Length: 625
Ligand code: CUV
Ligand code: SF4
Figure: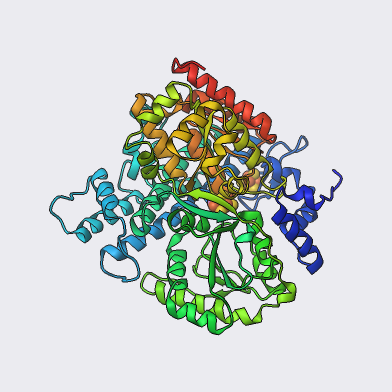
């Protein structure tokens, strides 16, 4: 395959990206797009998933000439094992984030920290009651201790099921039991996947894949869901608020500090420190008009949902944010942080700070955050950012203009409130065909696509078809930049969706949070199913990750499918070398869990595909078009 050099316009649909890509070229800064060119064409064995490195009799790669590995494993087994481990990486990422949230909550409950508090007491008590923790007449912290224990138990080996399985509609749960895919413990299923995929264990591709479904369900209904619920308890349940997106949120006359990663435990403290009068005074002393905190990726989503901080950009904008030359410091926790940010930062005056021992970057400075020193460390980081302001070279600064307004903050609690307290009006709108269905568009960017082209166009096409769109993760910024996250966007929606969203005063594309917050979408799907009295797989719902790249995205897709939600992906994971795995993913799973994956790189065709599915489900429920 000839290596095609993409023009700047072909790399992204956004003007702020074009402007910074031009500047990167001038400044001699390499980006992900350049490195993709160097890596292309990709190894076809890797792409098909038929390269096995699981033992040292290999590595083995499967071809016509050599259809079996040294041990006798065929393409199906090798693909299933590789994909199983890929999913395990994603489940581990979300769920270990969930564990960190539990540890923060535990520290609060046990009085081991003064830096974190229980902010949403009502929600905490509600969740405690849901999980069977006695609440009546008890001290708040006593309840919290027991709730922390409950959460911890979801990760272990003593229970038969994980935390929020009670939310799953009965019919769905029954089918999981029958299939043997009821998740028992978050860590247990991940460990078991590593065990099964050791040489000489699970050598039946379908069996491995079913365990993958179980493991991902543990992530969706426990690991991720626990992360979301605890983040709400500690930092507040999101409610609708205004914010802004794109690189125009950076300020020429202020200290620009970016938070990047996923876990609000670090970034919430940074935000508090930024707002302290001493810090603002220090910034002024250094010649800045103030301190501007902006987000990237999911930690940006978390702070935007709860605090309304602006969002500088999604995954592919992270390098380009530094190219503005106006970023003093970028502080990260973990996941989706390109190691290249250190090098890009070195081309300017941008300092990179890591905060988690499990995510250190060579060349970055490490300021370890612990439960009992969060505030102190946050102040240290903010001071470092301010100290760098005088080092900024104004001649090398170029900040794109015109940030776009959005509305964020749609937790399920907020959505229910907008609906007047119950889910019934949404169910009625679905039954009446005004809202024909709902689709969660989630996930990432990937330089193999024109940045955000699919994310934006799929959302636009779906709302035209009267399908409500919910976004999380990096699709949020895409939808926001396209002007879809404001109530005025109903003008772009079909007549039914326009009417309903218009009456409720909500946008036709609603922002539900970060990647772990896809658990909110699961919960919403369960609420709908329970209200109608059917399984999730009976509902006119779908999910999509058009420009996905990460293991986590594959895990999300898998728990969506296993939960009964048809899931579109722009491109397949590295499974195409196995007919068994590919056929299961693209169809076979439908018979087992009531949903499967669909692959389509073109967002317009994808919208039609999803629409067909929604028609089918509406028909199944006896609903007219
Ligand atoms: Ni998980 S959505 S790139 S940061 S997983 Fe990361 Fe949130 Fe994709 Fe974006
Ligand atoms: Fe080769 Fe089998 Fe070892 Fe994989 S497990 S590297 S296929 S011998």
